[in-house]
Length: 259
Image (cartoon, rainbow, N blue to C red; front, side, top):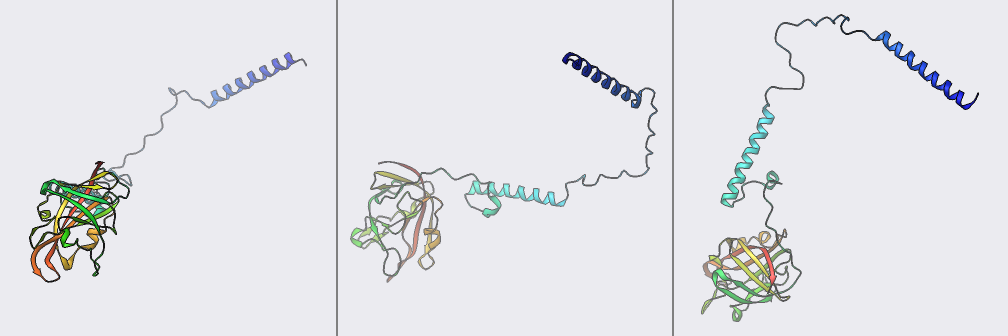
């Protein structure tokens, strides 16, 4: 058989198969106009049955969760107005606005501090630990200077840089006499040996009894570059204690610029 004959035979065979399929389909297909309708299901009298898994009311668990969310939102509003944190972190993760953006600087020793709000411009020198394990205070002869605790971060690095200074001397006010008058939002600028100026914004000013000094709160916050300014305050008790309290300024880095 020639190729043309084989092609014609194959075509004819496919046509016969298609005709057979069409014929078979016509046997099982009915005319919708003539096919009898299926019997209607009998309707049962009485209350309609609910579909399983659905409820017409939200239910107590959903209402409780909604009430809790409303309470959290309301208390966040209180925090924004008062500035006081009233909710545990586990309840507000992802809800509080992110903190202000901040730079992070490499290590560089401080050389001067300037606080316009209380008219302070003073040199800064390094201090270490006193024999009793506390930060050594600057010598009385350098009472108009601030001391940087050189075992901690430098101003602008992650963590709390600590500057200490006298509140007064036998002859009059010293460098940090006015720390207690600072307010949230005041700026503290620290000049560094690398020519950068680290600009901090005051968060709070607090006073603590010396025997209850909050070591973790002052030295343990490494979530961003911070600054602590520490001096004496409260009542004069004399002896080795001097003043009964410490005044501590808590500030956070908000800017860095060339000096």
